[in-house]
Length: 466
Image (cartoon, rainbow, N blue to C red; front, side, top):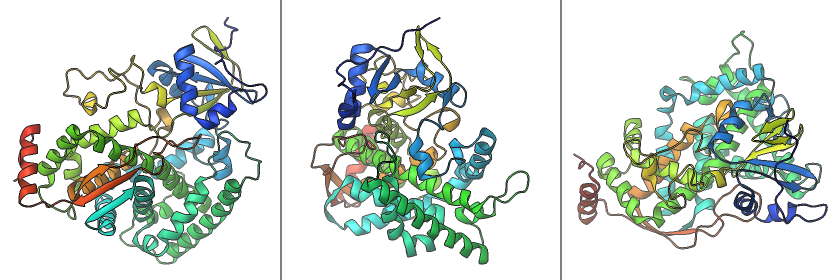
């Protein structure tokens, strides 16, 4: 029987261990662990042993054993403070499945088709605000668009128009409650703001639940359907669960999608060759349309954009770690992880391992093309949106809205990146650091520009738009 713990990363300080290093640059700590200790290692956060698993096979074990040998509930205490101990992934399995069943139908293709027009509308609202020329910073500009799409899609047009800005401001404070390193009992300013924002958000959502019950929307939108949904046994879904589900969808979408779409645009602008491929695809799919009549079918046809989004997810996973806690002693490759210890996956490192990806530091969206004979993507090697039973429920919604926002920007503007795209410092969500500015100029989609996109289409092997 194995008794040796996972090899400990060197360089830890007395008492604090690797806390200061992790707080300053967590991905650097994870990379150093991989380089010096291999696919299994541990580091120390103030006496807490953090066990790291890297690679597709360990990813598979991690997801398969969640809710068995590994607990998601005990690994993210900040979630309990932001939401509720009996909510979603942290509820008992039967209750989790009941709650998940409430939202999953909203993300099926038949429902997703209704969101494309909302996504295009909000993306074009951004185009209207930007005007013909200027500069914008990625996160401060694209983050609110992601929030606008979520508020409009999940809560309806009236809510978005009346409370969208206030909702976004409160939500930024609420998201500050995602604290992985510091103890949650510390009365830090961001934790105080998070709890105050939580109360205000719940009050706002409850008032809209009451409003919709008094005057139901017909035909029903996402929010109306949520309110009217019942459990399989006929019980009404409690208002608290509805409020939490809405907050979860917006929170998860904002934290992940805002960063991911910003990284995706930065990647595209830094790789003019593939940017040309994307423009050729848009020329083929959209022609000279401004996107106001964008359809689901046109979005599905943007297959090169799908490849770009997956490559950005690989290179810049904004959730740079995923965590669980061991519910019992676990043996793994000759080592033991003790009950109560943390177990981490690190997409930020795994996604750049040569065991899973050829030339892992190279931007190469075609590595995900199923028609590419050289493509060799191992199952469980791409985990930017998690995996297994607890994989992000809204991943297809997120990818579709990113596709629409990027398509509208590329369709309307010529752009160049002004600042170096680098990740933020610290242990927060791995967004691009500010400033990361883009200079833009409106494209003339007729005349010379039309000839330009036609040439691009021919060069990329895309059919010309009729």
